[in-house]
Length: 84
Image (cartoon, rainbow, N blue to C red; front, side):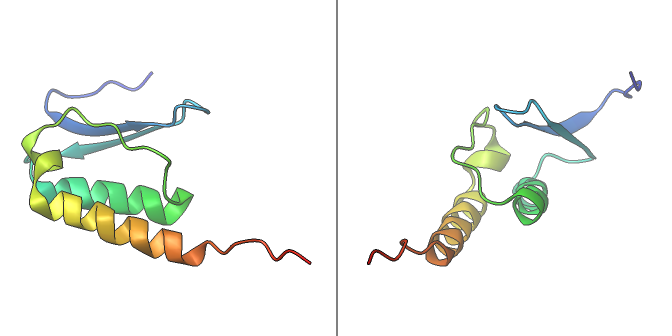
């Protein structure tokens, strides 16, 4: 198991596979939260649910706007199956 230095980390865990994403951060800012979630979305797609600790970086308007815009973008790519 790797040793971590004391500091701040962004952590995401996939509920189904238990996959863990960790990113060290120097400051707790909404920009870092948006960047972290953006990296995950680009690699794995939009999750069904995002659960946070409601820290200020996750409750900022910038973070909510990003999630809403991303959600709309991903929903617009999903099409209904064609029924004959």
